[in-house]
Image 1 (cartoon, rainbow, N blue to C red):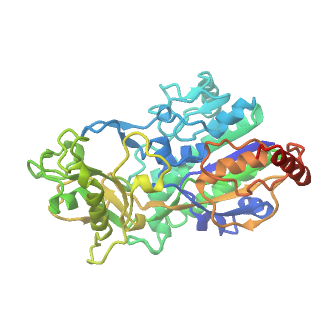
Image 2 (image 1 turned 120 degrees about the vertical axis):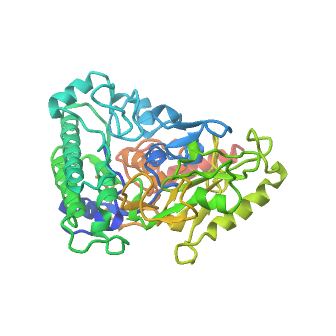
Image 3 (image 1 turned 90 degrees about the vertical axis):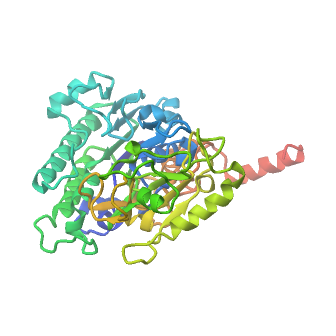
Length: 487
């Protein structure tokens, strides 16, 4: 059985699953199962898509976001790329069975991974016009012949020019679907996955016009229809795709995380300065990124890297070069910091409802250099702002990297339809890590022991094959082995 994975970055469950105008998505929902999908912590494009493909949590992959500490020094942050991940993916396991894959825009895919088939780079590609962003390399010329300039992202999508942004997002998506349809028809594949990053960009650029709960909502805006229009565009493209695959193809529609209104930014390092936990040699005269601050490491206990969530780092004796927190006091200090972060307040003085996680408590492993704590300010209603220079102001309206209407939400969505999947309708409790084992069960392939998720069907699907052992036969063998002393 072939497997087709329709990746929709940032798809919101209510928008994807509840709009009756999305007739093609609803066709798949009626034929199989669907529901909310719990993402990983943090629910970020990277590492979430690779967590899905490997069925391993971020700690077990040793990647905690787009930038990660390479060691315990203070300034050695590395940017993730495709080579940052070592765990085998679902397409690697299928390749061991001789099956071929096509991957288009699946983060992270620059440099383009060498697969048993074709890979096309994602938004991490610096410049598709000059960089080799495909494997094999000659695929780049083939794509240029199909669409001309291939777009992997909308550069400068955090902009106030909404007409330009809307047009660029739609253009990028249409070009990608042209490439997708071409390889669906002309490449040899058993596993085909693409990720539409344009949906994420349209959410970040236009959410306030759609969502009445957004603090900057503009009723009656001419941009109110941009997000619903984009979902309809996706539905139309899905309809074209469905015409190109046969009824023996399993189709998974999946998002890496959801979307929610962004209420503003919490200036985490500014707060740490106020709390006396981050000590500067001099306070900056203007807003300054953390990497350019003059930090007094001999007196600093805590610092943070901002983003959609906060990574909190401790300055520990014997671990960091100028560590000040005694190693023997680490656990006590961490509990105190967790409580202080959870108590962070909003502009009205009331608790934000911040969620704080210790990596070793939520991940099966913590490889490489993990944060000491992870904070979702206001349960992701608030972005984490890493700069300092706001003169004591802790809450700001605009993102520190430009206009941004939404943050990531913990729950995305999935829809699964396949010949051997019954029409089960709404399912609850699904997790992103469950998707790869579910797909392998649908395809009748063995689920690797390294996978941390479990199939939604837990071994109950009929694949038309199997190992030839009935339940009765298995019981006879069990009794025989027991009698021989093997079990």
